[in-house]
Image (tube, rainbow, N blue to C red; front, side, top):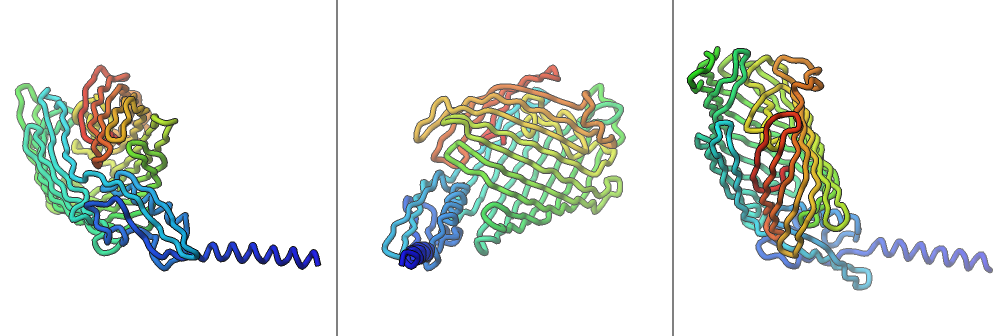
Length: 421
């Protein structure tokens, strides 16, 4: 009799467990939204009406929503009604129109700047439309459009046009000379999301490069006065994103792999080449107000002995304080690390202080992998910075960094919108 009672209790708990797992979602609601279209959110989340309730799926949807530029914060609650469940996503929207503003000094001690504007939630459907104007001795501009969920939750498209002109130092054996560099390009990308953490982009960029020698008194005579080439770039990008956001605080791991094949259509003096680089990013929140962040970038290109090598040592890209394009290479290893601490943190506004160290090494054009450990090619800078953050506006981080060379007799200040990485 006692065994029969035990069996009955066991079967009762099994049945109760199965019944709990079989609870159906009767409704999915989004509250707090203003500009974002409910139809868009219903399209991109995996939690659907008339499906079984799975808390892990709902939690992944919350992570996904927090990554949308139009969302400042997201959470959820579940209301039970017998065997039916109502899932409610609570959304805090970001102000999705954000300006771009970067200021820096060039190697000629002139002030350069970039201004722009981007709408991260066009038509309330997560589309991105933006552009910028840059004055760096010469005029440059770009316009781009991305609709990552245009055709479905997984498939979208990206388009861009750019006319970019700058004064570029080019490094010959005889010495360094300046060229006026222009790149006019058209790009089309297909965007595909495998799941909430993994996505691909693939496409083609058709562009023309134009290098014109800019004579300066005392310059050596360069072997090339002008180089004009039409090129085609085939691009593949893979991104794994397992980051968790809580306003300005970030935790988790992210990996971005970028591979390109560039063909020259008009000039055999610039051969076809391959280029690829991988970014590994790791973030850890420390107690209530601290955040550790680090990025490791490893890149290699076809090792052509050319003064127009693709990897640049640059203040605005990899080493804060080093200067504007002071060297080039066919390989690059860069490590950035910083600790961010919110000295002021209100529901609307925050100020972060940060201490950083940036280091890198380059392979010289035509050189060997041993160049990476050659002390002459290793650069280390360290410094301090400030971040002024508006928590209700997407990417509204105004940053100031001042870097000092530990291996170089150089220093400099970098301004920009958004975290450095």
